[in-house]
Image 1 (spheres, rainbow, N blue to C red):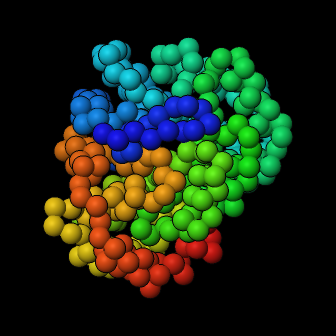
Image 2 (image 1 turned 90 degrees about the horizontal axis):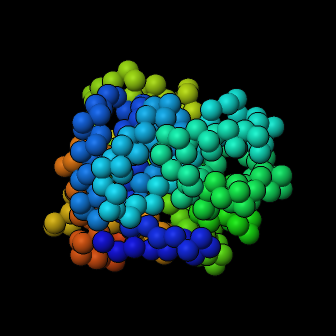
Amino acid sequence: MEERAFDRSGQHASVIGLGTWQLGADWGDVDDTEALAVLEAAAEAGVTFFDTADVYGDGRSEQTIATFLRSRPELDITVATKMGRRVEQLPENYVLDNFRAWNDRSRRNLGTDVLDLVQLHCPPTPVYSSDEVFDALDTLVAEERIKAYGVSVETCAEALTAIARPNVASVQIILNPFRMKPLAEVLPAARKAGVGIIARVPLASGLLSGKYTEDTVFAADDHRSFNRHGEAFDQGETFSGVDYATGVEAAAEFAALAPEGYTPAQLALGWIVRQPGVTTVIPGARSPEQTRANAATAALPELSDATLDAITELYERRIKAQVEGRW
């Protein structure tokens, strides 16, 4: 599979990565055997970038990745984790002592002395403007606890602030055919600065797979049930912030745009990886079959200009007014 570089850190990632939120929590139950099978299927399909966080299943996702990598020591996988959501979301909690404690825990969970990439996990907006925060992250690099650091953001404004920081290696941001705002400024700024872009929520929490209807019922412990209106965390993380009824209707139109040989989910992923500046996209998966289908997108034919134009027209007509003012 094609690999792309995080220019500032010198690290690489497969263009299709794997998000592992599903393997930890908030998406219904996934047992350990199935979680390990997902990781195995990803590696066998050429995926070399796993994204996780210390709060996914209170460390379960990190631990599952560690178990898998111990069984496959020959693999060269970059593991990106996140930190910052284990405490009340106040800027004053983003300090070096906490960073060291969170880092110690993630290193234990992942079974490694040095973490490949650590991202601030959608912290409060003032954190991005704090010199002390980024000095502390530089200290973690100097102490050889981490190889590189980045940020995971909610808004385009936060992304642009982070990109201006000289040692930020990557920005993780929601980008999909229902969230196009990053195309205007964030991706060009990242390309110019050599900052990698990790595209998350690529299927708008599954909406863009075209499998859901207004009658679809999600499990009580699935964020698509309990966070539709931002009750637990930022609303943009669930269905990309799009009203569910609108999203289902727009997703049906999107599915009809899939060319021969593409599923709707592959169309969404294919659209993302073809955006200039994207380093990797990190769809999650609950089964090996989903994992293999996602990875197969990298080998599909180029999308036509007519298809790309139709995707843009759908976004501008049905989605843009709901999301661009907020994120």
